[in-house]
Image (cartoon, rainbow, N blue to C red):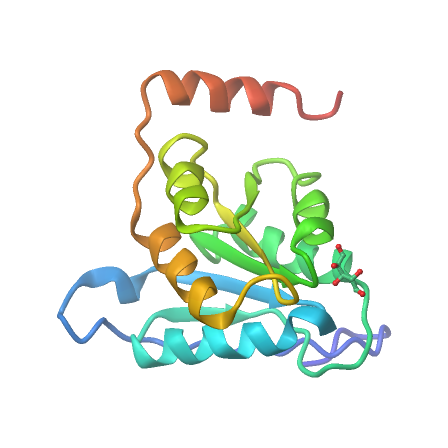
Amino acid sequence: MSAPGTGIYLKMDLIYGLFDDGSRRGEMTIAIGSDHAGFKLKTDLIEYFQQHSIKYLDCGTFDTNRVDYPDFALKVAEAVTDHRCEKGVMICGTGIGISITANKIAGIRAALCCSEYMAEMARKHNDANLLAMGGRTTSPELALKILETFLHTDFEGGRHQIRVDKIHSLTGR
Ligand code: RB5
């Protein structure tokens, strides 16, 4: 699919299904995107989605040609804020640029995670809806563990909800 007049190629690749353990996680759709520096890791994570029948939306980029990470952070963030997807995963070289960008978007709580513990806390305490990782800083093996923790950990609410609400009260300042 090409965006009219822009020449920007945007592939929206949807895969449907359930986990082979019969759980309903397959009904959640995960948006995923990267820049050129995150492309290889994005491919690895998509392979994981496919192996586990997790529905996903691939927001690009689709090769290793140099691109600007804010463009892809925006695509992933908007897929979550307009409710096409419940959560998102974004990868650039370090995960820094893409998370800075996504956190500009109202309703987004993007967390750059370098460990399973960070992913656990990002969900339990921050109710993060976007996971950012670095394709040049995180091995595929660790990235998969971080992703699994992020997807399977619930928000604790309570006092953490009050703090999350305070974050969003700052939007626009
Ligand atoms: C691209 O070279 C690199 O700057 C980008 O992937 C990211 O690491 C920025 O934060």
